[in-house]
Length: 379
Image (tube, rainbow, N blue to C red; front, side):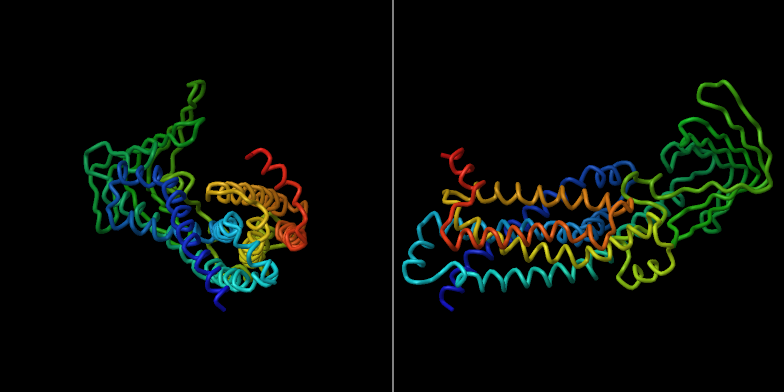
């Protein structure tokens, strides 16, 4: 137990430090889009904090495999560099006898990743999209002004003679819609209404008794259309492109919702493959966290290099290869070329084979080929 506590004390500080750093980097990568909301949309501090909180579960679930590998590899790299592993082996302690604390910690990581993937991450993704929709709702409510040209949405210009924000009614409306790259739509209507659809995350501007003037961007042709009723839909992608879509994506759905949609979606469709892939990944990703932790033991034990930078570099390289394989399998499974029931587990299968191979080589004191080449380059 003394040995187990000693190994655990080597692992957990690096685990939490690595998790914090990776979460910080990934949140920082989203700051450009968040800053755009603050500057151009006037989003408040509370909404920004909400956005960050809702993004965290998905980010943590994504970072856990890499963090698990870094923590274990760096810990055993330190033990190896200070010859403590050699001292333990000389006392009759094999590499396999050092595994229980790592297995226990990796299993806790598996359970944590499972909870994040099944419950917390879908909640965060849904809440994030709902918050963006509320921001869009406030945009259309606050952004439209009477007898003033306003642009509450990108490439959509409004001029309203009278506007009731409480009833969401517009009188004598003039709208220029430039969202279509080929055609500019100019809408003139006697009356307009704002309809909200929270479930579909769409804002509908319904115009009554008016005319649409369609002019191609190259000015080669134009058309005039009269209407009694015309709907102009504003989706979340018109508020912040790339962060939202009309239809709920599979990663926003709970396990129950995924199973329900799986029954309702015909087999062979892209949507069916995406739902099946997402459902199976709720088990494959936590398994990757567990296997990454175990792989860190032989890698750290055999890579005798001083400094944590070597361990972090090797860990990130291995995680990059894993993630590229995962991304490739996601694309292949979504298109239906390979069944998600098989493709989703291929990255984990390679991790399992690598884990068995590396453990056997390290326990038998046999060199690991790619580590030998890496040590020569570092020397």
